[in-house]
Image (cartoon, rainbow, N blue to C red; front, side):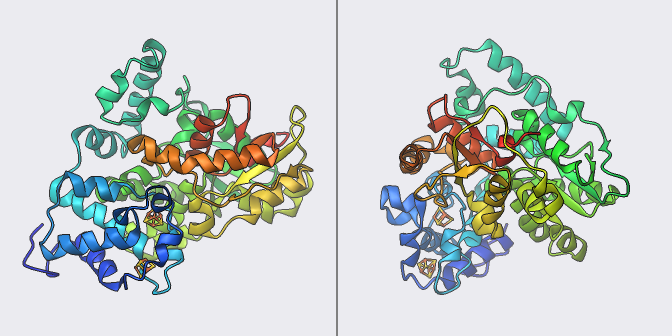
Length: 415
Ligand code: SF4
Ligand code: SF4
């Protein structure tokens, strides 16, 4: 990257961040909605303060150092600042671009780069890393701290155990639906593939009641962790891989059981690929599975609750799904159609503090953001927490007592 002077640098990411920073009127309206600001009350927690720092970076008064990287990392990329900005400042997008600029200017720590730039874009390497992680998880005591030292990620021990057999290693290429059924592709995502293969199997079984389900082999991560770390290159190569794979599958829809994957595939992928027409059209065909179930009366009519679950369920709205894709009624519609009671939980659309790798990079901040969510759940009287995002589910699972089920809505259905 070269930098010719204030506002004239040749790094497109820094240019985008600086444009967002200049669009910010510094009114402070985002302070009322930012989950990070709410717990710390620090000016550098909120979009306004971060954008001001990025302006300083662009103008040369600030260095791209570790402190700036940490400050920009204290953001969940939840999108509330953009959604609530009276000046229509693309704040979240500017902050994301700021991370990409920083990664280009000063690099990314070695362990993170190894994981996100070397393993993530290549499913065979990710499979090998997951297999190694599975055996390491079995061999190492939880409190040894070795995983933390090896990975460089402070909260890595918080991740649940990996499955011995990832979903994709045992999935058929195609599951036939009723005669003449439309074709959909199932995108599994990392968490369901490596940690929750039963969820993926149930999603495919449900979809096959109405569709022929294609499960393209060779699919990998949606790219969100790389995008959040500012690594556009690996995310772009994943986007191209998925565009080609799903194109070859000749399907009407691309369905996933994770709101964050759905958002990344539908919104981030077309942007990564420069709004190419094919990518935009592809983005329009992405659905989180609750949307598909809620749209199909024949599927809704056949739903019933899991026989071993009795009680009310509280629903948590993932930021990527509600703010990013405008989806919130659909999971509730699915649960109601199955005859389940919904509990009224305060702040059900407030951020849980999961935010992809945020809970691992910033475990204490993440816990502080989560604390009121746990309290609201316990006060709701619900017997289970349902959320349509794998990252949110991990966060809730860590934070609630072990006897309380944390599930995707479809896991409360009889499948
Ligand atoms: S990002 Fe928007 S809401 Fe926040 S300070 Fe800037 S102009 Fe105001
Ligand atoms: S994206 Fe969310 S966490 Fe980040 S600054 Fe905006 S409101 Fe705060």
